[in-house]
Length: 309
Image 1 (tube, rainbow, N blue to C red):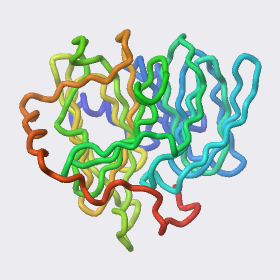
Image 2 (cartoon, rainbow, N blue to C red):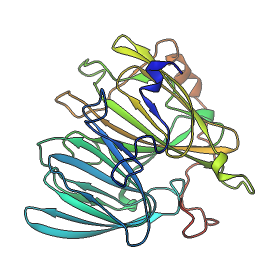
Image 3 (tube, rainbow, N blue to C red):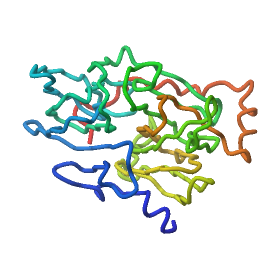
Image 4 (tube, one colour):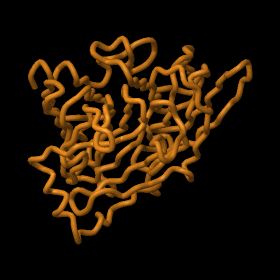
């Protein structure tokens, strides 16, 4: 990975700050429109979100959480029923308006997607049962997308957030694509964060959890130079300010998850992409192929309660 890759790819813990395992925000060099915070909490722990002027989506990665949030002098406690693992299907999430402050308490692993904005949209609790689940692609490019924070599902000012589950051996974020030019009706400008997790493939036994990995690539477009070719493990983060990105590949034996956080400078909140012309033809090969029968992933009945770190 060259210098342009090292700038945009961060191993778990590299961005630790103020009790958070990872923090991406406006203090991150070259970063303006999106942010992400990830933390591991134990019972009795709490982390503050004390700024206003930032809209947020709180996403339990593993475990359950209580969010105490205050807006216009009114304090509300919202319980987020979580999950044992990101591979156990959707979770409750909470969208907080840019007028809110909050504190998160619970036991497990939590992510907070952010975007700075002065626009106020209504705070909203989205139960797992209301999360749109999309099975995208086909065959070896099948993946599962939880669209709780997309424009079709959530009234937000700038944030576009979703999470993607890719079964072992499958490819996602594919064909490689970009969203770094404003072409009305065809492409939008969106900064993007990828937060990764990986674990032994569903149904496997005896596999070492810490060994789980996938692969991720990003490369240059006319908008800028970037060169990321990385082995990714749980907690790693890739920043995509511009350029083509993908594939994200789940290694044989290991499932891959990523949380996508997007926002940009365009007036319209919309996700419009352009495939790399060299690889766009691959979409046509999906015609007539079935979705991978392993999908959808929902709650794993073999998962042990509390096994979420």
